[in-house]
Length: 119
Image 1 (cartoon, rainbow, N blue to C red):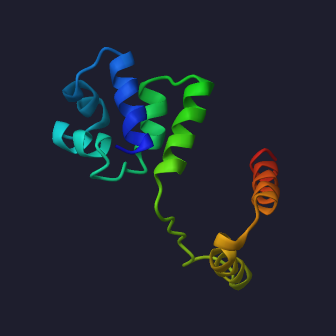
Image 2: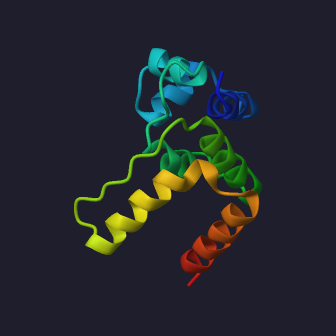
């Protein structure tokens, strides 16, 4: 079970819901939700917003969901189709050097990104 699966199951139980009820709220079948909870299927990107809205997550629950999503990801796809040549070059360079970045470098990048989001 992935961290996302654990989060979803806990959220469902905390809201006294059966699998079928949560699946209805998310617009999927019970079997698909079960597969996501068990880590057999990846959580659809659209659920990120839907879960926050439907379940009125608290700020701490939102942080927990974000952490669960990050912990469960195996790969990230970046659509570079409409990116500038400089943006493409930067994205590719980052991807190539990602595994070699130190914790300090990753922290600096994260802080830079958070500043941009909070502008």
